[in-house]
Length: 88
Image (cartoon, rainbow, N blue to C red):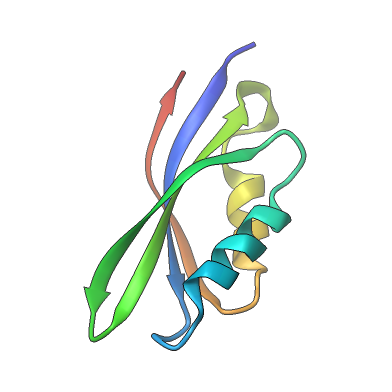
């Protein structure tokens, strides 16, 4: 059984969101078997900064859907999108 690495883009609701706190809440919301490998940040516009987590999930769990749903339910998250997916 392999693993899948996915680069996601998580947009906060507004520029005032504490990104360190948001990152911690994203990590806590992960479904079983998934883990965040690292998190980059991307300046979007007008002070808004997106989090770019790289998430590792088992290949047999149906891809990144469970992670996307979990992240979408976290408070202060405006949107979640998959930027890139690849097998490890």
